[in-house]
Structure formats: structure tokens, C-alpha cells
Length: 115
Length: 111
Image (cartoon, rainbow over the protein chains, first blue to last red):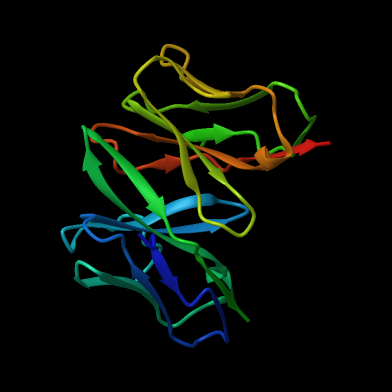
């Protein structure tokens, strides 16, 4: 299996621009998560989906952030307009319940720099 | 105060040493406890998974959970340079799927 795939791996953009991050989860996994990692705040859950439906978006920092999952094999996280404080590494993860437990598998991340 | 506290390090040890990594937490609803390892510029990968209190051993790694003290530990025996990474603790209440992470401890094992 190819694992969780994220694109782009690096993104540099100017303040005010729209940014779209993409994720392909592991085939067969029914949960998908978006995280943000910074030195100061660590790894924070932004939103997660179950069977393509958003379950908990309480971690989304503000209305500039939105996430969609149009089908089981694709999700996007969009920031519009972007700000310098959005600079971070964004991870996508997917999981499946097996034997009563969940194991989340992370993608390689997208390193976002907003200047 | 954060729900999960973890010393960021860095922690530097000689090869072969026993390493102890720790997290404390405040949410008594947490029942599932995990340790993730993250190499530089990579995504976290699951290392250990424990439910409720007790010990779990996997090769050179031992995870301990003390729910009465709200304290979890990861021990690495015979540490190797390849263990150099950031170690993140993660916890969850019922269901085990919505995780709260510590900020991670950076470990360096030197030759």
C-alpha cells in the first residue's frame, strides 16, 4: 500500500492568497483527519471525517479554514485568505477500526510557508 | 494549562542507555494511550498502543500507564542512534480515535 498521500509537499505563498492542500487516505480506511503542527503548539487536530462526513471541526481555527471530503479517496483543506501565522506543517491521517482499536496512519505532511 | 504536558527536551543519551520519556495529563476520561515516533521531516508513526493502566512491552520498548497519577511513560532499552527522533504521546477518551497529542520530546542517541 502506498500509505497516505499528500500534495504538495511544500507550499510557499504570499499573504492573502488561497491555499489548497490535498490528501488521499489509505484505501479502505473510513476515518480521515487533518492536523497542524507547529513548534509552539505541537500537533493539533483541526477536523476529522467518518465515511466522508465531517464529525468534529472544533479545532478549525477560524472561518478562513475549510475542509471537504467529496469521496472516500480524496480530501482537501483550504485556507482563504492565508496569513503568515498559518505557516506550519499540515498532516493528513487515516484510520480504520480493527479489533476494537484505531491506528492512525499519517502522511508525510505539507510544509506551508506564508510570507 | 494544556490537557497533555510533555517535556520538549532535547534529551541526549549515549548509545546503549535506557531512555525514559514521560507525559502527564489532566483529563481523567482518557483511556487510550499511544506513543508515536516522528523522524525529522516525516509524519508520526505509531509505536505503542495501550488501553487503560498497566505495562506493555514490545521488543526494546515498554509503555507504562498510571491512571491514578495521570502519568504515562515510554522506556527504550539499549538505545540506538536510529532511535533519534521526536517522541509524541497521544491520548483519547472513549473510542480511541480523537487524539490529543503532547508537544513531543526530541531524543538524540549519540555514538
